[in-house]
Amino acid sequence: MRKSIASICAVMALLACRSDKPEDQIRKAFEACRAAVEAGDAAAATAPLDPAFRGPDDMNQATARLFLLGTFRQEKVGVTVVRNDVAVRGNEALQEVDLLLTGRSGGLLPQDASRCSFRLRWRKAKGDWNLLELQSLDGR
Image (cartoon, rainbow, N blue to C red; front, side, top):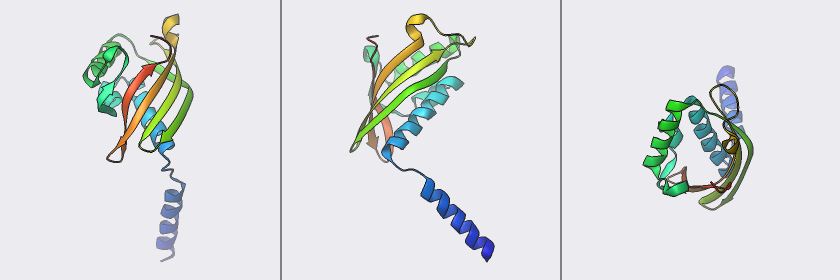
């Protein structure tokens, strides 16, 4: 009986520590994308893209996946998050990130591509945060 009570208390404590804040949910979704990029998994990296997703140069879901597949064939990519700011308003959120990209050998990618800044617009639909728009802040 005591073990059961202790187990229930432990589960309740873990649930109480879990963060359901929208900002944390978005950061978690972004981190899953980042990890998928580093793993070379284009399907997982593009999984949270909204069906109406738009990126640079009118990129949509399909072209984003093709872009990543092509990139992963040429290079193993490392992504270090330098800044990750999230602001939520209702079912929409803006995230601004600064990233440092590294290549297969561990060295920096070409100078113009090594540090990137992006604004991401997220939308909550059916309980999940989906990436609606990706905009480069570097003018690329």
